[in-house]
Length: 588
Image 1 (cartoon, rainbow, N blue to C red):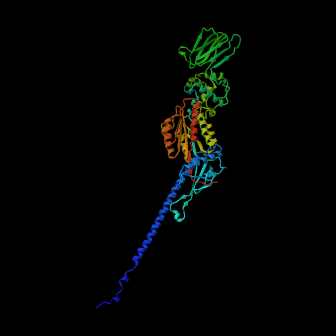
Image 2 (cartoon, helix red, strand yellow; image 1 turned 180 degrees about the vertical axis):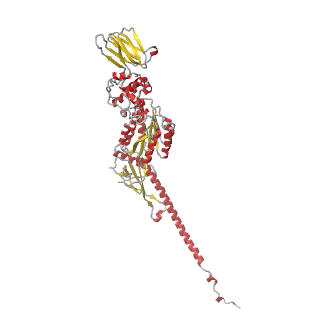
Image 3 (cartoon, one colour; image 1 turned 90 degrees about the vertical axis):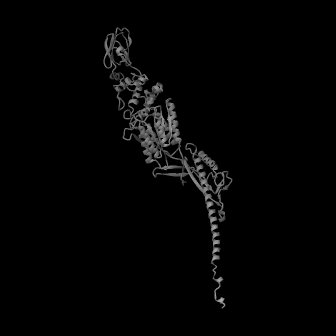
């Protein structure tokens, strides 16, 4: 039987059409994906290129801004400085390629601005001003542009937009942008750590005659005398000289006598012939000289009495028999008319002075033993009574090397003031008998004249004669850690002319430990060693630990020579001002 094919569905009709449609959709979707991938790639390439161009622009602007800031100088004509700054900015900008151009083009008037940044202590922030009235200038702001930039020759403007690769397909063939940089000399917070130990007046004492010469020392003491307004005390002469006593005649047959006392010898002159002279010595004992016929003579101990100090001279001449002329300390004070003059300062006495002149090895080294004088008095003050509580006027005296150090600090302070550097300065002095071993004379301040006044009114051994370098550093570090401005460059300027001897037994370790703490606190220590006795090794180590610099002023020459060297050091420290880029700021 033949099947009825008309009752069976067509196999062709049973085959669905979805397979061919899916293949078509995939082709369309693949095309869109490819287009999107190309678009994304184009976008990525353009974005990357734009980022590179922006980085180039920022680098060029940063370099140009720093170059301009280097020309800032508050002491020069600010109009001239503005020209110099803009010239420097344009020069460096032109050397830095950006995008497709060999150098950055700037609008000299619009893109380069000078201004002033000032610390507002009340609010703890900086204020910014730009424009010709914001003088003296201490900041430079430069804006670099990808856009239409006016040409320096005034010929028009140049199109410095960034050409892109694929964005033209979406109607964007060039891109504009701008970046800015602000640069200034970084303000510094500086702590001066000054050595006011006893050795800071050594170069103007008799003890330095061997190294500096007698004339240099006596000239320096003469300057001190003038600084004190040339004081006189009784009949004490200024220049060292032997005491001469004149005794008038008491009548006919009685001689007039003249005696010059030289400690271990006495020159005797009489108006009548001498018959006998007897010397009484300090500590007991005497010696007679008889059979004399002359009116003059020099008498000194001989034999076992050789070199002994004479305490009294007894004279027989004419009718005068056993005329006693005493030369003990009390009598010398009376011969010099000092009994009628009060000793001027809290510590010391006229008798102590006389004993000092008679016994000091340094006075003897200078050749002035038994030569009583104001010059010896000033040396006595500086050697034995130098603390402020003992002789409170010595800060007025140009003692060395302290005066050289003060003058050098003046150079630094004056420089900071002249350039309007926005630096602050504080002062730490060592050594002090308090538990800290040093004292904060001044916290960080913009009132630099007050700091200058403080170190000017301090003297060698002002508080204590010892040398505690570590304590001075500790006081300075703590002040910087507590009160330095956030953006300030923190620096310690440490000076000494000697060797650390406090705290006893570990003075060097203490100073080096403080250097490590300074390094951890990002405080740079600049060290200055002054004179032949300074511990240059310790000062070099302190500088190295903190990334600072050591300056050595070795001395050995004249006071004027090493003062000049020290001034050069402080001038270099003052001028070492780091440049810094600031975050972009707004200002009028």
